[in-house]
Image 1 (cartoon, one colour):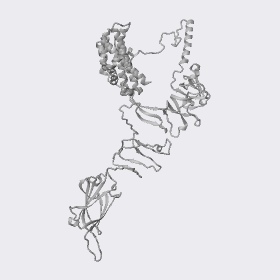
Image 2 (cartoon, one colour; image 1 turned 180 degrees about the vertical axis):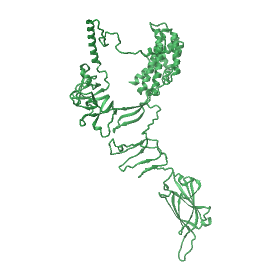
Image 3 (cartoon, rainbow, N blue to C red; image 1 turned 30 degrees about the horizontal axis):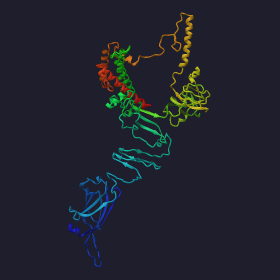
Length: 640
């Protein structure tokens, strides 16, 4: 074979890379003999090798020389010594990738060609040539270091995931080019869609840049936070000026505020020796600053509520220590020893209350919708479809239909400006027959003249959509059924009318003033009648300033402490030691039941309950005084 190759030279090779139906690389070469037959009078340097059975071996190697794929072809030259083959249709040798489709085309590649003129296995090097163009449409990895333009659809098939680690910009033009991914897609970075659509009809599904379809469900949004709070938004809304106008946020009232965290704050209350010496020299020195972690909770209204609950607990602890100390020390004034039982039990009730508060909020999670709107509205039908109505107009309601011209009506309400929720949405194309009417919340109302806070807002009576403000003391009986709402702001300007923020739908007690006056009159009439006729037994109403019965003026309940005393059967008249033992027993029982608060974690408490010496009580009381000052200071400062 080697001797034969001495008489062969490589004349030409054409490696053509085509995108076609055939899955491979077109390869063409001409084999020539370096010792051709001589023709008299003509100098012929070489001659083709026609009709010769040969074997060709193709090897694809990477930049480091590693073999990535190899295959062989059994073929024959034509009359002109030419061979035409497709790399990818040969017999794989088993070296490198198992087949042509499995080649990893990432990085530069070289094509080595070996030929055996005897069509056996004694191959010799024929050529080695770099592949300078990506040779094949079906590849495992596509690396594009520059901009890649797709002038047609991009299909990702066979349920293959698509990974984008950068921003993905999808723009639709008038030709409506589409990016279609048939398999699962995973975006590991931000996705921006800048879609310019001319259609603006909200009732047209094609007017929306994002369309989700093909399932019985619409969209699932999962946040990284285990417990999404008001600080975590599932969805936010902005206008064209990048101004936030609404959001759907998490709702977790007391997120992650635990007794352990509070106790860490308390335990850190202990000053260093140097700080202690300084404080001994200055009795007015403030307590140590609270840790920065407090900011997490002070910036959340709902978590702040729990801190306030703990403040009540600290106050109860201080009261218990003070009463117990006064009683033990023999310095008690009248009632101090009796107050020990009440304050001890008050401490117990406050701890149980904290646990119930946390447990309730931990089990009541959800979402909240925040918007610039401040009222709930419903679509009500116009009495006259052609009547013009604008936000702030007062309308009368008759049997569910509205009009500004109604001067007598079942109710008087207001056209909403920007409701946070709109109910009873009409059918598409029917919106012009309806208007949004505020049912409850705050809404601007067109009010004529001067307005004071607390004034009743009534329709003007002119059927013009305007309102007037009437002071509570100037209301007549017939005015109450015409109340639109109560003014929550004032106006003393010179304009003919102003938009007044008005609370609507919450004035349920507006007739109380008139009813009270009527009851006073009736009480007086019955008292006079009883003087004339001793047999008459009057039934008086309890109203101020006239009340001749012994009935309570309002229905009230016992306070929480009184109810708790009854529930647990604690006898505050017992000896102090017995009361403390009973409270300690109750705390132990509750600790076995409570998950979110445990009395056993409260520093110094058990020592005071089991061994109430003056020294223990003093240490306990001072500890909780310092903790209370610290918590009260930081909450007041940060929440203002």
